Length: 106
Ligand SMILES: [Zn+2]
Image (cartoon, rainbow, N blue to C red; front, top):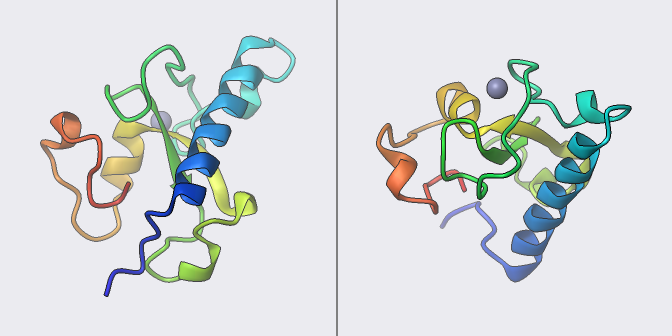
């Protein structure tokens, strides 16, 4: 059985987290808070999440694989590039995942 939570609640949390990042990115005072936590450069918030290498993804600071109880805890959420999150990986990440927005880690 998968530890991943595909509930509508998780979907809502991801959407809210993206919107929060987008708001932070729009304000020069808070822009740094919306940067990728892995490479510390800006994320493309104009792109749909998970659609381009520079687009936004929700990364779990503590991997869901090891901390399933934290997967829907916003304190565990970090803004990250799709690419950085993919290369950080945790288990199998599809190298050709760009065409599949619902990749295994999503
Ligand atoms: Zn990055």
